[in-house]
Length: 177
Image 1 (spheres, rainbow, N blue to C red):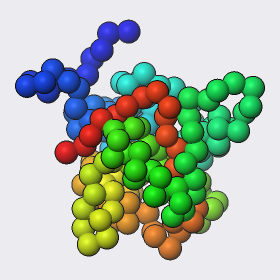
Image 2 (image 1 turned 120 degrees about the horizontal axis):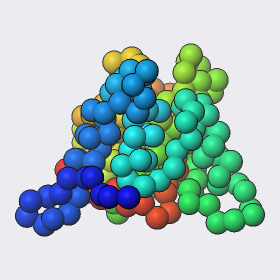
Image 3 (image 1 turned 90 degrees about the vertical axis):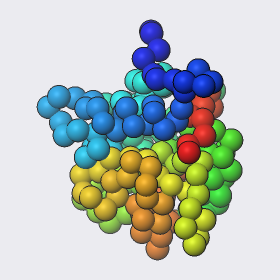
Image 4 (image 1 turned 180 degrees about the vertical axis):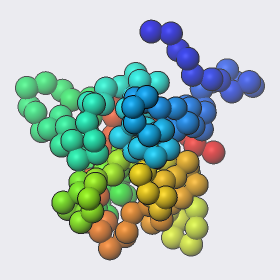
């Protein structure tokens, strides 16, 4: 498959900013809203762009898939579960700062919403809580973030204990600036 990602003019390297924005501005399925308004579409487009598999499911199904992939002992999974809540977030931040691809996910039942949510945890941290930025679409404006909102702005931190964090073992996103 040809690499369609853009590159940094000075280094020739693909930047995290560019690959994320390309997936965010595209549309995974023409029958669905643009990825900026579709968290699962954003993640599926990012997977196509970067070469990792995401099943054609909504956020709840993607979280279930990631959970299943990390507990199947018959083979080495490409996904590693970092944990849930504060422990998972701490590991997610550390790995994101190393340029690793980190997914944060909640399901609708645990989060108490009509839909679950999936997004990418970025290496950049800002604000009084030094929280990581998040990149992902959403059907509602609050959690929608083209890398401009922290995890505290995307998810209710009183529900941190139900946010799951996963790392892809072979895909490197790079550093988000």
